[in-house]
Amino acid sequence: MKKILFFLCICAFIIACGGEAEKKTAGKVAKKAKKAKEIVVDGVKIYKTYCVICHGTKGDMGSNGAFNLQTSELSVDERKLVIKNGRGVMTAFKGILKPEEIEAVAEYTLTLKK
Image (cartoon, rainbow, N blue to C red; front, side, top):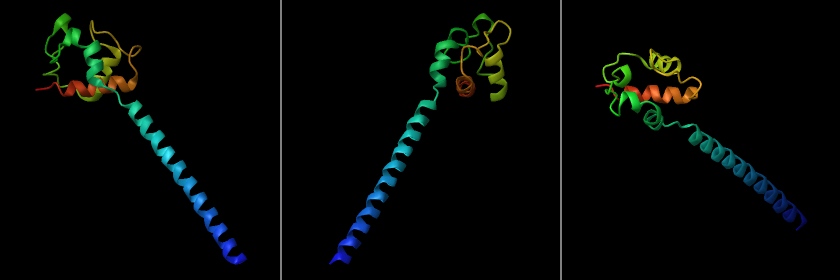
């Protein structure tokens, strides 16, 4: 009888420890998922906040000498540089936007191409 009771105690201990590991793993996965959601940057929203004034909603307004984004042949990296450093009378956004926001806007402007 003592052997059976001892065996059951050992099994219960192993199961209890295994359950904690699963809870910890699930907690870590949930934290990573939450962090991934926070990292997502909305390039459309940023474009509408800062760029629509001169480029327009479709990228072809050309106000204040803004380039037509529908016909632009710039790559994503070139667009990021222009957004970051400005060009002509365009504002440099390196002190205004974070690098991931600049990248999101540059990628969004590619969707405006015809």
